Length: 171
Image (cartoon, rainbow, N blue to C red; front, top):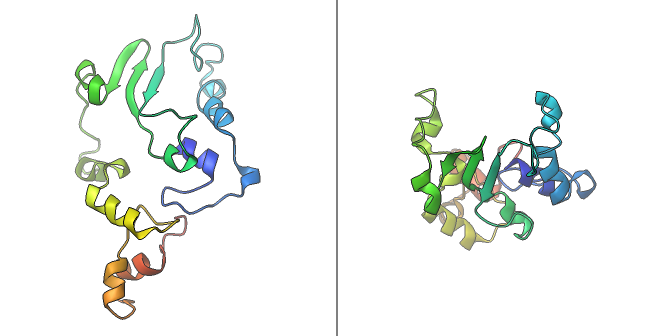
């Protein structure tokens, strides 16, 4: 998500917050998240690059970060994550070599129930794609069909914002 934000200037919901002049190219954004942030942990030269003498930390992504359209960067995920030479996460074909994930903490975390933003219901994805909105809110969703069937639903925030845009300040 953060790489997408740096490159596109858009929120998770798709709203553009930053003009092109304030965005980074893909390589610069990636370097900021890998080799250029090592100063923060006093590990400059110890990690952040795939080269001899540095820690064996890497993430294999679900698609080519440099080749996908900008709008798809937000959907990239790690299918294999290696820290210090040990596999710590695997998904799909890499799932069998990864350790079992601990439950989300704290126990009451919404992630424990909802699974996070990347687990959007396939039916919701199809409806949003069929709508054709260029800046839909992926957090609060669409409800255009309900809005078309009724008068302006000002008493129902889901339908109201689904029809006219999102009420979220940053989405």
